[in-house]
Structure formats: C-alpha cells, structure tokens
Image (cartoon, rainbow, N blue to C red; front, side, top):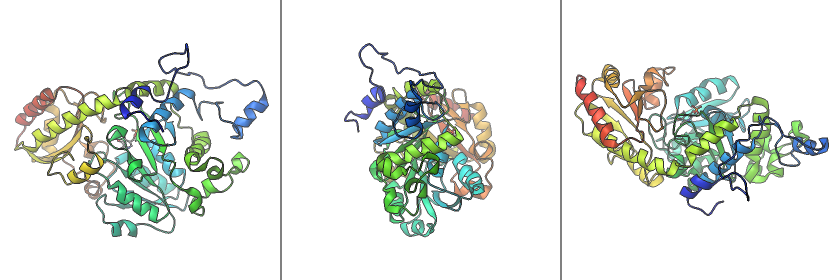
Length: 429
Ligand SMILES: *Cc1c(COP(=O)(O)O)cnc(C)c1O
C-alpha cells in the first residue's frame, strides 16, 4: 500500500514513468498484444504468467487507473468495468451462483435495486432487503443458509442514508460472507470502507471520480482481507478447481489478496465482456487527478445549499447528513468526518407538482439523470431513475414521489443559492 497521502495518490498514483517515458499516463489503444512464441502466450492463457493479450480482459491503461483507485481505497487488487452497473453485477456474481442469496440494504441506487431484485432473480440469485437502519438482530435474521454476500451503499443514491458499515461488516463476517460496499457518493476521499470492515468496494466512476460527466465507468476493489478458504463450502468458484483454466483454484494460487479480482477478470470479463476502453480510462484518470480538490468544494456547496433549504418556508424536509438534525448526522460524523458529498435531497411542501414547477424555474441547475459532476443538476427520482418502483418501494427506498435531488457542482455557492431562491419564490407554497 502506498505511504503517500490520498491527495498525492490522486495526482500521481497508478503510473510512474521511467526515464524518457511520457509524463502523462499513456493511452494504450490496442486490442491485442504481440508475443514472440506461442509458448509465451500460452502461459498467459493458463494464468501462469501475468501480462496482456486481449483488451477485453485487461488493458495497461485501464490497469494503471485501477491501480490508482486501488491505492486510494487501500485495497490489494482492482479492476475497471464499463459501468457502475457492471461493477456491482460482477462483484456480486463473482461469488453468487444460481440458488444463492444476497442480503442488501433497501436504500440503494435504483439501477442496482432492479439488478438485484429482477435480473439477478432471473439468474436464480435471491435477495432479502433490509433497512439501512435495522438493528443487529434484524440484520442477522435476514441471513439464510445460502447467503453469499451483504451489499450496501456508503451514502445511498438518492436517499442519502448513511450505512453503518461496521455493523453490516460484523454481521456479514459472523455469517462467513463478505460485505460489498458501493462507495460511489463518498469516494475514497471522504470514506474508505475497508477501514470499517468492508471486504469489497465498488464504484460507479461515472460520478465524482470522473466528475465531469464525460465517461460511464465502474471499478471493483478488493481489500484482500476476506478469507475465502476459511469458508470453502460457500465459495466453490474461488475455492475449487476452475476447469476453464486447467483446474486452477483461485484462492490457493492468488491468495486472499488476488483471488477475487483475478477470477472476476479471467472468468466474468472473459465471458461477459463489460470492459472499459483505454480512452475512457484516460479521461477517468484526468478526473481522478483533481478528485481531492473537487470533493472539498462539492461538500462546501452541498452544506451551504442544505442549510439554505433547511431554513426555507416552502421546504418540508431536507436530507443531508451534514445537517445536525439529519437522522444520519451522528453516523456521518463517524464515517464521513471530512464531509459527505454534494448531493442534497429535499421535499417541497407542495409535493410532486411543486417539485416539477420548481425544477422548470431553475437556471443554473439543469434537469439531468446525472449526479456528481462539475455542473449543478437536479432530478425528481420518482419520474426518472426510480420510475420502475411502486409507491411502497419508493418509500422503502427513502424516495417519496415529491423528492428533488440536487447535485451541487463546483460553481460559487452564492450563485447556486440565488438560483434556488428565485425558483422557490416563483412557485406556490
Ligand atoms: C450511478 C450509480 C450506479 C450505476 O452506475 P453507472 O455507471 O451509471 O452504471 C451504481 N451505484 C451508485 C451509487 C450510483 O450512483
């Protein structure tokens, strides 16, 4: 693990040029790689040697960026994926087979909720959803004999609940399974879930890590701490021979540090091919170089906007864990002491209709299905990202129909507040 501060890793991690080599991370825009003998290449195919042969599996530029994210999270191995959806799917599917079960927080991104509830169910993987605020007893009660993973989001999109990572990790470990945490909103700048017991971290790098709304992407990072072999019977994919690689046992050959990502790359990426392009990884790296500087401003703007909305007579409720009366304030003080993110959600007293009218009036904040980039944007989840959900599911996910989510960008906070102010003035109370 790197000894440098996170700021320095953001700028220089993942790639160190040698003498006379490019200062900027090179884009290796090549699908394939040349070898002198078939024997050399055969070793790669057998996972006997590490190296590149086809960019669907691994590409040097993607690996440099994955390495940087790995260092930022304090993990032992990482990989990029084509999207955050692919990252969460791969992280779960790498250890869950048909007939298995997942325990998940109910307060998660709508796309991930659909993935787990619908698509993974079709593959025979079932889930039990629990409140992010459940007690230890309630959480323990959700486990089954065939449970293989626990899933949650550090700061949930869009409900902005904060996960009690330590509690979720404790219960996961008591049942011999890993905790997978989607750390998209907090980023490693504000929270490093491995420090609190999480085993695998995922990201939609589309959000703050890119930070400019340029590339869709994802990442998976392994803490290297989960002992697969100690729970051999639960994880046959990692602990018994893989016949598609001449009987390799990943957990034996690559150890705790490397087994999860090696299997995920060499099986899931090979067979399902949700790879990130080298060009996109390059853009991602540009975003990463300023992540630590940007997150501070996103948080400053988020806090100022949350405080303004909190005191406004037309606003019924504001969710932002930086507000002292927010139900997640205490938990955020523990897990997110330097700030959470720039996303604030709030409910207007006038409900769904007021929300629509309000959003139309905004000049700086654009209506987008995006969050977490340099430009402020807003969204009504019930009519967009969460439109597949029933009203009951919306409430369970903490996203009532009249909720507006605003993602504070990097603009001046006074201008953002003035924009909100004029839009609030223009609507009926
Ligand atoms: C956006 C998002 C995802 C999905 O990521 P994509 O890059 O859009 O596929 C997953 N988790 C969280 C928390 C997100 O915000």
